[in-house]
Length: 359
Image (cartoon, rainbow, N blue to C red):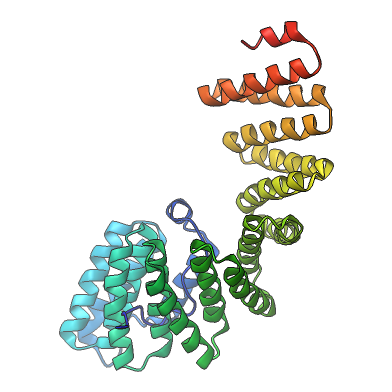
């Protein structure tokens, strides 16, 4: 397969499994920060021997700063201009750096076809200049872009090449990302056992580096894979480990996501008391973060778990609170669901008069 082109001297690879909407809204993400720091540390903005390329270097710096600020359109313009100037000056190494930044901006924007175009150009230059770390970055971007485009054979080929090169130069962080990204491709192919195999290897390496942010992400992915296999004991193991790390990092966003899955897994196991514990913790975090959607979901789940324990009064209390939030947010669908749950609970305890109240 013809190799693609990619970014210059980035130190580690693309985010492990971060949704695009999260990237757009939260440029504080640790994996994006690591990429940004790598760019800042490895791009020299004024070469003593290349005064004529100073403008191109300034544009490169400007593009990086705009990308970090989430101003993707402005970043693309600056970086494209920088790349063109470096090409005119015959500085292929710096041109590759600019192309690398362009690939990152395109990835953050969800423009995966442009990621492929920039990364292929970058990889070609990096191979000519024998810049191994840049090749690793290019291959990583290509693999992830093809994964998002659901072109899984291409994604696997590029990520396997990325992993091989990372192993050759003993770049642990790039190995971790390549392994986890391969796991995501195989998960998309519904080959969950293969996905788990790669993510387990990734987890081992990330723990050696004591990278809590990376560990949190991989633990969540492993929990999701085992949950999809309906192996709920394994799923709860990884989810609980993930929650411990999330608490340490004070990452409430991940905690809210994982606590829902953890409660669901314990519900599937029939352990309703633990189910309620985790749903209540999720509800508390949802209140703190003012996430009304998560509050409403948690209240509905708590009602179902309480019914499973035969505690219909608690269930109805949760459903009433869910109905109140649904009314406040004008969510008609959730209002209907809450009323239906309340009627069912009333019928279960024989309070038919109360049930009519929710018609």
